[in-house]
Length: 255
View 1 (tube, rainbow, N blue to C red):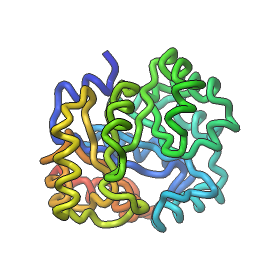
View 2: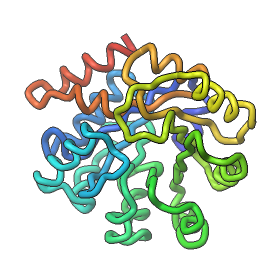
View 3: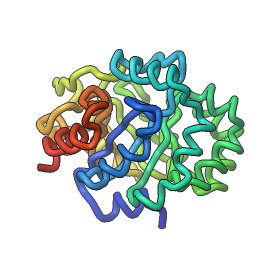
């Protein structure tokens, strides 16, 4: 059984943390992962930076720029992760835009993920039809989960299609805005979350975008299997006290 499937079968209110590889320091990637697991994170999403992060808010954009300026590349990231599984046992995903993956080569990318123990990927701008036609066999042949995103505007037909293509979980965006916006659980948002829950999808769901407090995390968990925190965590990282800043942030959710 994959690490992702085992996690969702054994835990509720799953806390996933996103952070940018190579930020705040170029070589901080694995240290942050290790400290996050020790502090109670259930799932990690490590972002590989890209120079044109259109869906990211200012916090993630700034972290990506700093990481790139410091020399982060996909090749370097895989080198950093080569001993990942000696230190981290929870599921790990890589998240980023499709251009760097295509430049690296999709097959090479998937093989490199397997070699370092990455469990899956989130590539928001990879079209579903292109994935199904060209890359699904490569991902599944390497045992990798490809995580699709759903927004409040996604049609019921498309959601069912995503559910059929998925083998990990489905990422529910709380809004169609960029990352870093506070979660506003309006009547419309509750209706959207309830609509997804009523569809009885075969895959578990995680809510992301705007989760920045215990209150918003707990609210998201009422509608899904867990929630994803990104911008709030990245903003909290302190290069001068990396482990301390990770632990302090996690205490809000796990303390």
